Image (cartoon, one colour):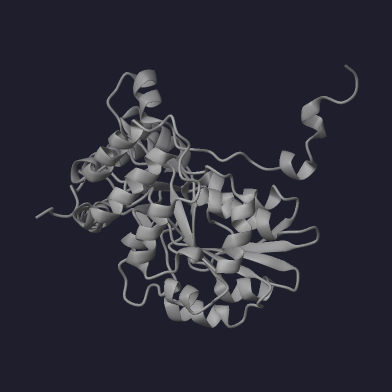
Length: 383
């Protein structure tokens, strides 16, 4: 065969995309280093999935020879009842990641653009660039989406605007009134994709009334997921609420069996386990307080978070410190690849895992910086 290698014939806008960097699997770290590790790198629920979801998944396995319900009827029906949302306004995805991609593929045409923020979830960028169109990025302001700047960057060719609330990796939020003022400035030709993956953790007055806006006919596509508070990250199931006409068009583009039957069954059962959600939210609330107290005890800066993770500022040696922590059995995420070279992101774990993180952080900093470690505060009382 002659001519260019096939990989060189991939469009330039695809070749320039940086592949998403997942956190290292805990099994790989334990096998490589011969240690017992705790994974606090990927914003997972440390309490695991609901026992009700696990049992439902086991039962569904016996029907795995059949294709799943491509419309996810029963899960959408339950979501419709719980959210007070017409089923025609709901769509399911293989996690909210698929729905991020689906918005770009459905709406962007040659010459269009999308807008989002620097220092946010990198899949917004890859979803847009995979279509060959441009994503305009506006700098964060005080680690939070600058909605005023994003509104100014929006033009007549903007078809999609991606907002994360809370934002990953900073954990910051904007309130519903701020969103209302922003939406009033956005032309009807642009769809606002509001990523609320951490919605259940963001217990702040006036945080969100996004679903009310969808019910009222707003040009809003609200993403939520079963990966976080419901503890089903490995199942890959999320959902979105948006305009019924847009959902109908998206259903032409999405893969016909995008959510497995096992995932559908687990997610439906997880919606019924309110006690598991309550315990997960409470563990997170206490865990954030524990981490904040421990970091203050070590005089380490951080961004106060409304999610289930925290952005921690540890200086120019952040990557080396994260590697040293790995060898102490604690997996965190260095954030240079997301625009924060002097920070790491730590997920909230169990009280014991949070203590192990704080201890390992103190020891790793001392090792990298060549000094004696200070006594480490165990953090917030757990009572």
